[in-house]
Length: 447
Image (tube, rainbow, N blue to C red; front, side):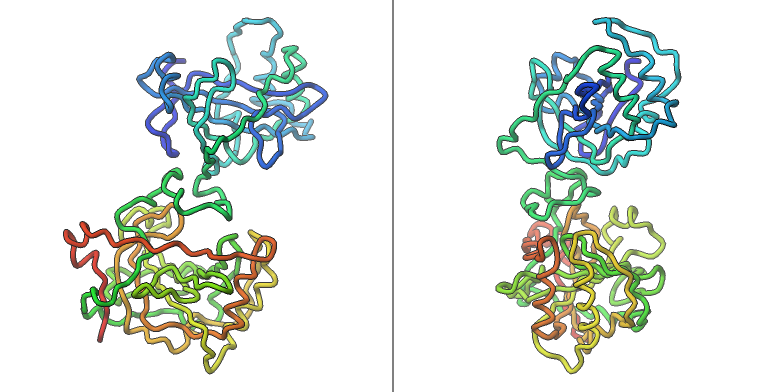
C-alpha cells in the first residue's frame, strides 16, 4: 500500500518510498539468473526492491540521477526440500502465466520475512540505471553481499509457473564508475584512500582527520601529566592475533587492560593493537614528525569505559589511541617481538585468526620507551569510516626493533605480501586551530 514502506540511511541521499519488488531468474534447467554478479559468480535469482525518492513522481524520479533507490538481494538455490512452507512457499503459490494478471494476496508475510536473516550492514553501492527499457540512469544501487537462501524447488516455480525464462539483463561495463563497499564489508586491498569519503557513513572528508604531520616548532608546551597504564604488564592479556587483509591486529581480552590520566578525561578500556608499515624499500608510519616517516607505527586502541563501540565512535572523545613509532635498531631484548612475529606464518591468509598462547605483555613490546613525552591532538580513525572520535597520543620516543623482524611483517597477506598499508598525512585544519586553539593544536608534555 502506498506510503507504508520506506527506506532511508545507508548512505542514501534522503528518504525513499518503496513501490514494488520483483525478481530475475534463468530457466528450470539452469540456476544462474541474477542480474548482478560477484567476482564472476551469478546467483540463481535476484530480488529488486524499488523505491522512489520521497516527494517525486515516477516521471520526475527517472530524470534525477538519485531519483530511484533499488535494493538488490541475491537468491541462492539450496538443496533444502524439507522446509517448503513459509513466506517463499506462500509467494510462489500466486505465480501465474497470465500476462497482466493481478492477484490479491491473502497470506500474511512481509518483505522482512522474505529477506530473512541476511546481514543488511554488508552491501555494495554504485550509481547505475534501470535494467529494463528505457534504462534510465537514475538509480542508486545497493547490492547486498549475503544471499537469501531459498529451496531450488521453489526457485524453479518462477520459470515453471510463469512460462518466463532468462529475464535478466547481461552485466554492463562499469565505464570508469566505482563500486563502493559499506564499512561492514571488507574493503578491497587496493582500495584507494582518495575514494574513502564517498563510502556509506563515511566521515573521511571531515575537518579533524588523521594522521597528521607533527611540526615540532608549532607545538604548544603544556603539562599534560603522566598516564596510568593498567594491565600493560599482563602477559596473558592478548587473546587472538588476526590478519585483517590490511594489518596485523592483536585482540585483547575484555576488561583486562585500561588507560587513564595523561590529560584524558575518562578511563579507557584497551581493545586491540595493530601496526602500519610500508615495504622493504620504504617507511610506513602513519604520523610523521617534521615530515620524517618512521618504518612502522603501532596503534593501541582504547574505548571510553562504559560506552559501546557504536556509541564511542559518535563522540569526539569516545576513543583514545596511543601511537608508537617503530625504528629498526636492535634493543637489549627482542624476545617479545620474536614471539609476536612467530605467529605471522600462521595467519598468512586474509581473515586468518589464531589463539595467542605466548606470554608477552604490551609492556614487553614497548620496552623502555619514555611514556612521559608525547604529542596530543584530537583527530579521527585512519581507516573508514574515519570517525572524528579519537583523542590521539603520539609518543616522542620510538620503539627499537631488530631490522629482520620489521622486514618480516610486510611479507604477510594475500599472495604473501601486504605493502604500504599506511594512510597519507592530512593537514591540521587551520580554521579549526584558530577557533579552538587548545583543542586542535598539538601539545608536548615536558614534565
